[in-house]
Amino acid sequence: MDGIILVNKPKGITSYDVIRTAKKILKTNKIGHTGTLDPFAEGLLILCVGKATKLVNNFINADKVYEGILKLNNHYDTYDVTGNIISSDDKVISYQEIKSIEKDFTKTYLQAPPIYSAIKKDGKKLYEYARSGIDIEVEKREVSIYSLNFSDTKVKNEFEFITHVSKGTYIRSLAVDIASSLGTFGALKELKRIKIAKYSINDAVDLDLLTKENIIDIPTIYKDANKLILNDYMIKLVKNGIYLDERQIITDSPFLVYDEANNLIALYECIENNTYKPLIIF
Image (cartoon, rainbow, N blue to C red; front, side, top):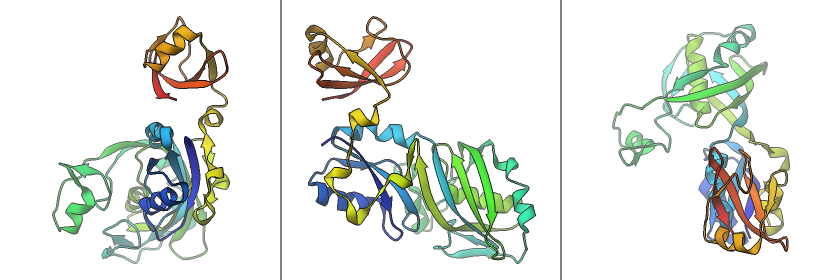
């Protein structure tokens, strides 16, 4: 039982709640998720099951697409409307004004993560410092906003958006940064993740409908990857974790290794030019 599951996480539960439920349904403890969604957020959560847990970092490092609602005029300690209001104003921002900054935020920049986040500093998660009332300096991280598009909700100072971002981007921080650029305060009112890499929320299963049948196996995940067939001698070496090189294949993409009887043996990835490391051995 090795593969991934696309889950539509509902609002009001943690990402680990999803894993806990999946473990009971699938009767396995070997499950990991590929990027936390806050309890107030919903949308696509990819679970990696069995040996596919080795793929977790691949999805964490992938681009993601979110949609949500930005609410202006209040600054919350959590950067979303579930927190405590720290500052407020009554500045009115027009739809034309917020549309005018879309291109300004289609960029790579240094972003400060929210203090209420799971990023670790000196062995502790940032939210642990926040809950203890300890002020710390949060290091900024380079993130990329590939696209940002706003639409009008017809509610004063509330705007829907959709954005395509790089790994490590906090949409809560993006909301605060956008509001700041407009000379006001802001926070997320709603957030939904709709895409991770090539996987869409449209293909996700609701948590209460999850079964083993929803697992996407590794050959299906890599159905467009190269397929390398090796002889028995090389298969023995592969099973022992040997690195492969240009004598077997030349590619910069992951590939599947099969024996001559068409049994899947391993998944390899390129770690440098013409050097390939086994990521999963079956």
